Length: 322
Image 1 (cartoon, rainbow, N blue to C red):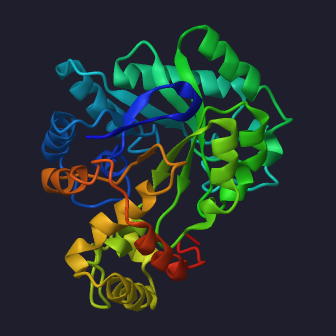
Image 2 (cartoon, helix red, strand yellow; image 1 turned 120 degrees about the vertical axis):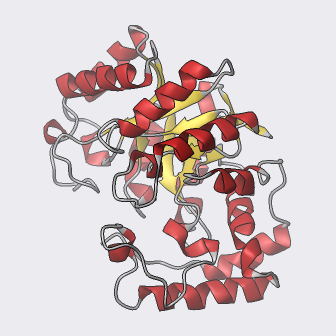
């Protein structure tokens, strides 16, 4: 496993991290706790040392599973978690005042909850689960974050940027108030390359990349005939004619790179890791087989520059979350 520096935190983190939304059982169908625990252990066995979770992933369920694993391991594993917005609105509306999302008392309350769930004395990275730059000069959130740092309850502070809105955190990044940002970045959504990544490099802000496979599109397994269980949230994400759209675009990527669809997940991860601003990428890995498939990519080898340039043509501006 190859490791990178998580911006100004100085933490050395594995190129492949563990995205722990799915193991929280919130919206995803098929997660079983025993298998989730095996997947977490296997990932650590293979050199993974960063896990991204959130209180909102099963109202603390994902955090509690991770806490169980931390108690059973002696290795250094860094955990980044997230506070849900008080109004429970994803993504953040830019007209909403910060008092409705992250007032100081609320930040402290959920930090304490996450500390208990994980069974740790300090959170390596505490993130807001949504963000709007309109909050920069509002409320007491920044004072509270600094107090929690001074008290040793959080080590570093980050935000999870709104889906497909990387520029909505530029003011925060340039302010110096944030240590880490988490953002959607993949072959389809290349927009962080435009302004966010250069700003993060200039201000030494760590970058955690989420949704590397576009919720499954870039695994090459979505076809026009794919069906999800009725209660699986992907029914909404891939509604109407979206599965056909994805299928056609994925076929085009495979043709461009002259690869089989089975090779696409590796190419998708290597594309992300080819950008020097990226610290770690966090695919969801609910099963051991997913862990073993993804972890081999964290070998310090990105895509050849020629392939990176070829993939620029596959930028796809759209938002399936809406």
